[in-house]
Structure formats: structure tokens, C-alpha cells
Amino acid sequence: MSLINDDATAYIDILETTLYPDVIYMDPMFPSRDKSALVKKDMRLLHHIVGLDTDSERLLATARTTAVKRVVVKRPKSAPFVGNQKPTTSIESKNIRYDVYINLSLR
Image 1 (cartoon, rainbow, N blue to C red):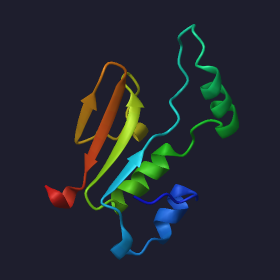
Image 2 (cartoon, one colour; image 1 turned 180 degrees about the vertical axis):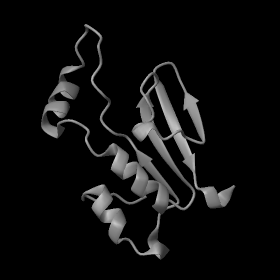
Image 3 (tube, one colour; image 1 turned 90 degrees about the vertical axis):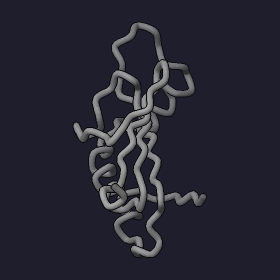
């Protein structure tokens, strides 16, 4: 596993095809919620620093054309799919859902 500190979409766009990753895991900031209880203080601070998630749809589109095998997106269980792109399958727990987009060439 490698960690790259860069804009993900820009980085993926310049990758040579021989360096494409097998899997891309996206963990975008969860959307705002309507519950009355506040999010934990450390997460509120992170939301304040990072700001709104405005590029998940663009990143997912880029990731889906780059990942050799699959893209996995972590979402709240009740959240809509990123960019309304229906995944190949989803894995759900009590509060979290992992949307899995399988590379079409692997089917």
C-alpha cells in the first residue's frame, strides 16, 4: 500500500497505465445529517477544515476508469449513491454501507 499526499483526481489522471492500482478505496466526508445530536467534536473540526465534499462524483468517475479490479466507496447506510451511480454490489452493516464498483472487463 502506498500513501500519496496529492489531489486524488489530478494524481490518477497522470498515472501511467502500468501503475494503475487494483483497488481504489474512497472514504469521502459523510453528508450533513438531520439528527439533533452533534457529531463528535474532532469530526466537527475536521469538517470545518476540509469543507464540503464537492468532488466525490468526479473522483468516482475517474477512479472507475483507473482501478484495475474495483472501486469501493464508504457511505452512510441511508445516503444516496455517489453521483447516483448504482454500484455492482453493496455491503451493509448497521450504519455503514460499502458500495463496490467492479471493473466491467472482469465480468
